[in-house]
Length: 286
Image (cartoon, rainbow, N blue to C red; front, top):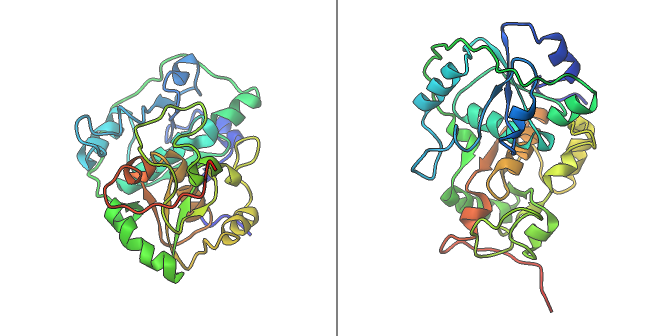
């Protein structure tokens, strides 16, 4: 079984296309300082928080701001954009999802991300890339890719009926309610532990190999179908703040070709604090 879409490139392909003016590399790291210690030649930096989040509202920047951002980064509509980053492409997947939601086309991910590039001994540079600003065309959001809190709540009836699926991609301890955040990460203000009722626990990292690359299509299909997350269902993925669920969204929609997959970007930091939202908790201290 092959991947459903041609949305991955290898590190070898990137190395061979470093001088291709129509290939634009964007590095998106969890550690926003990592880029400055060395990056692939020609790659521009995207700060997932500063560049993508609205400075005042708890939301994303509007399409016209995305248009301006891409123009500032020197990207044209007909360029092939290659995203990569640390953490097995967590944040590269987040940027891929957000840009897709914003209407951007011609996106791919470098399989294995920064981890694989470095492990192979490939060159990094601290030189700033030469960027010629462009005029990126107007964008229109694809709202079919994003789920809001009330839509998730309405989704639960279909989960109970077996028509919908809900995927919690956090760690087992977060899912059970034993902890409210990842190990070695800050608590981001959520008051309750647990998961959304009916969610299936499929931690995001089960979709990756040790070198950071995605598992084969056959392995991925078996992983999600084994949890009842099948292509005939309306699927919503969530995590803590949507970086890990973006990775799973990418796997389900882009690699496996599931026709209806949404990312709930409010995720547990919203749901766990929201008044009137039901939760399930399987962990007990007794």
